[in-house]
Length: 579
Ligand code: ADP
Image 1 (tube, helix red, strand yellow):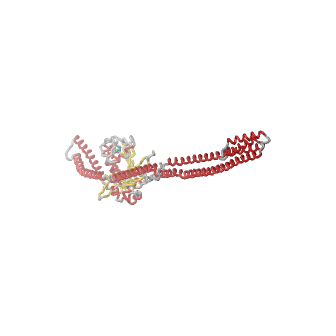
Image 2 (cartoon, rainbow, N blue to C red; image 1 turned 30 degrees about the vertical axis):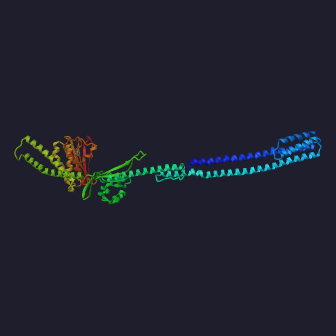
């Protein structure tokens, strides 16, 4: 039954019962009132007339007015005949009254009148008695009816009081609970109300809504799962190894390629802490090194390609670490949520690089012999062993000599480069003195300096200790510093070579008065093939790169101090031979 009908019926029934109670009460009260009035009007007044007539009868003989009172009351009695037999009794009284009028003193008439009045009084008293019983009965049934109706009202009101609030509140509570659970993502919630009240309809609507929410949630979930699968497949199909980590360095995913190169099973990698896996896997250690050692400054290792032996072949990879940051919904600041390590397979480039290096090595090696023989032939021509030469021919010979010197320098640099690139630097480390290296270098650049009228000064103390060095390669570096200094300095300037000892190292430096080097190029000039833009000298850009490799291979350090317009000082240092 509907709540509205229930309420209408309950309250309506109460209303009817209250009305009925009022009606019954009023009806019986009215009946009682009528009964009482009836007694008063019909019988009590007659008794009063009878009493007055009796009193007047006593006075009749002595008082003439008594006769009038008697007559008066008799007339009133005649007008108030209510009971059966009262009419005859009154008529008989009237007859006897007439006899009294004829003879007032007649005692027998007195007696007859008294009897008549007594009869009238008896009739009325009996009537009073009877009517009083009727009133009593009316009062009794009034009590019964009022009590019955009252009890009925009470019972209905009591039933409504017990049932109605629960009838309304219980479904509301059940609904509230279900709504709360749905709010907590439990979409399996349903409500059932057995009756067909408004709550039944509400439950039906609620269940439809819950079903739709569940459907929506499931479809979203399956969509998400599908998208996840798609991304996983995408990452798996990438030819480059990819490893994803969260912000706490826990490995979230690794594609098939990553598993192949690390040689680990998915369960050994995924879900593990990167630091833990690093302990047992060298490759992973080198991959996550920069992440685990926070703020690593080892830029060198970042650049170095990683060599991995997998699938029976050597492959080269370049590591790239991508930091993943998002702006969470409702926030403004970016938050780091993890990293992705991508290994770019650079094996094909490496193979090409190897081919290039081999080609350069072969070519430069093959060129060296003919250039040397050109130089020898020039020597013979210059010494006029094949005949006299004129001034013009001499100039041509000088120019060819200069060109072949440069050619020899370039081929030498290229050969050195191929050694460096293949990792085949053959070092002949021995005990050598700084003076020996200095002499070797200054001798080599003497003519070049003289041609440019450059004064090479040396600031070298005595008793310098011996150093651990490959004399030839170290001298090559010093020659390269000096050649550069000559090339990039104006004519008639000065170049100073300084050698001094600092603690356990011997420091070599070459200062010139050239145009200097901009700060931003200070590191770059040690890169292969790099030349400061605008420096129109016909070099290769290889000299300083090879110098760096040579010095670092001997555990020394190399660098430059320079300011634009103030000249440059190139330096390197080597360890002192101990003991
Ligand atoms: P190359 O001299 O063959 O070009 P290097 O590797 O020896 O190659 O030098 C790299 C670059 O550094 C040069 O091209 C030049 O721009 C700059 N450089 C080297 N030495 C000096 C110097 N003493 N003064 C100014 N610039 C220099």
